[in-house]
Image (tube, rainbow, N blue to C red):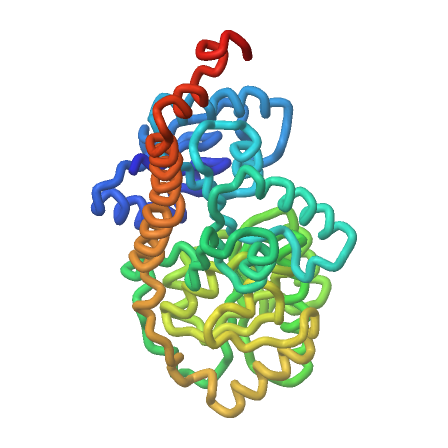
Length: 378
């Protein structure tokens, strides 16, 4: 197959798909990445007008996408990220499009703002050949509206390069609990709730240290609130950090997002051998072994952390077969899905249509092809 791999920005392809691309090419397929910005090498075609947010460049992007598909003679396009996926499915590119859904943009789907996203997504299904999901809630939503044989669920998302996240023993110290929060400082990730958890742990008398890693629009406000709460001796937000080494030095991860597709940082934590505490929301509840509290119940989550620290539970190794997280498993599942349910299914349908025409009597076949020539009329 000649597979097009599309994202809104090249960084997404560089971050999430190298292992999958390597697996597909090793199986004899050709992969042609494209995005609105360059990737790390020259292999990524830049689509003019394609950005992370809809804008005036949509018409240029649609033309560029059609040109990319035609020039590369693509058999199928696998697209991820909301904007790129919406534009390519509305561009009549001439190839089947598989939407790799990293997370539908809602949690419960019951609020008015969430219903707008549902209407938009449902409208795009008519130009979608297949869907790849990474959590049970999204899988259920698509299954009510789309043929099940053309939906693939990946239990570990795109997977991980396990060499980058080696397993390590839990630090044995019982002097202070080391907690880690990693994510974008944004409203959806709710870093303020991590501070509420910290305040509760402090009130319970739990000795701890919390590091919050990442960047985003709320980083400055988070640092200011740390000072206002007078917990700067316990909590720090230094900015970016290297996830693997940070996880190796911590006892546990805490996660506070509103919803997720499938939180990669929690998979990374699992690979290293660290348990995670989080809220029971879409995507997060799919992480094996995650310890969950009711959404927004910071006190309840902090209380559970305190109990597990006092009992020594947090010093015990996590029981999970980390090999299940390897990206090769996801790559193989996607490849078979494309071969058998998308491109293969398309070829079968084409052969069936051709066969039906070839089985017709000669005169009837001629009438189907050129009725105006045979009869002198249209």
